[in-house]
Image 1 (spheres, one colour):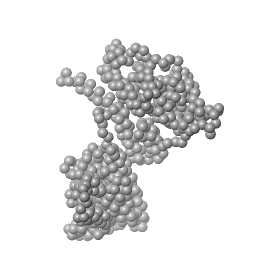
Image 2 (cartoon, helix red, strand yellow):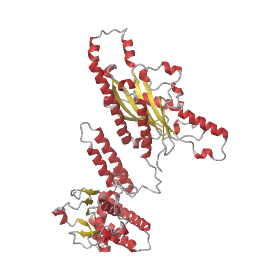
Image 3 (cartoon, rainbow, N blue to C red):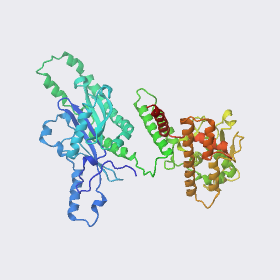
Image 4 (tube, rainbow, N blue to C red):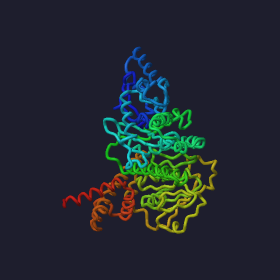
Length: 584
């Protein structure tokens, strides 16, 4: 279930929002030289009424209350901003929108969620939560150890007042002390895990917003300094204790709109914050697991985390590499662990749809040879002019392996070494290096047009009538003995009474069975460090000896490289703890 919802509303007709049901809220804060930390702008989300709250016959009074609730949201005035006390304590630097301003609203047509922005949250309870986050983000939580130069991301909070991701930054101002003013953007959430998991995403996109504000304000600052340099004016002015408070009061009352000269600043921030709330929720999904997560799931999570960290490093580097490198990195990481639910853009032309389809096109003998190389971890190279066909073949063949064993380059204009990828697609004119073509650890599939059958006469799905497939390898070892997994898979594929879905579930069960054997072998040989004789006994216990024993062992060793770092770290930690316990 996708987490499209960022706020949870009660079922009352007036859409009352409780701060303890809140998932996230974004606010821009400012440290005023006269009044201290202040909230400048806040964006929250309102959900449509729950269908369960309207069960049964409609009541006219309920409709009126619903209409009043909608009108309250659409004509938002933020009563917290209209009190006489607050108006008296606000200068231009503390104010974003006037109390009479209705605020900004955007509606997500897919979910019906309304994103509302004004200076303060619409509920008094949320006002205190955001106010405390604002004060802490611009005072006690910021120090030289956490934020060098008082700029950067920090995390703080508790279960009672919510958890906060805050990013502090400075905006140039020619009239301020030190020629800069202090701001922060905070995201307040009651779910600590949700906020921590969103850290790389939030950091990446909040930095874009902050950099845009800083660059715009810097241009205004440079223009003002060019007209009247304030540094020389201040050095030549006569300092008087009686005049200083008035000078400081005048300098403190500059709004962010004045500093950036951006007339649509608040509307722009509303769009940015609304998108952030929606996108941050959409990227996290909840999945019901019937047991412990599989190795494939753990590897996918680890790779996604590594990808986000790498992207953050590229974007955060100063004077770093070109902008094309992060994009290249993202594409490389993304294509490595594509699964059935995350397929790339469909390319035109015929496609392989399943392992059985691939076996029918290549023939049983050629198919077994190809799958044997895949299971042994050898490099599988497809060379042809149709990238869509090659990509579909890789999608089918990758289902044979654990996700951690897959390194794929779907289509390339040059040869890539085996340590980079075990699935490689090449254009027809790319030569294969001699050391590769003569190696027993690679297999080449040349895809060429069938000259005997014109393209117009063959149907799009009739791949064998359109293309010819030539499989070649320097391997001399027989592939008809094992591994045992391949033998069982071929029995399932050759049984026409089994549907494609049943064969897929059969393959899934076989992979889980052999991954469990891999875990036992890893624990026994790598963690415990047992000898060769003991390892042989374990292999016999696992059913990996007998006919095809050499292939079974090669498969187990190759699949061992696909174990997740989480699992390996857990075993190593447990082993070290077991070694210390007797001495303790």
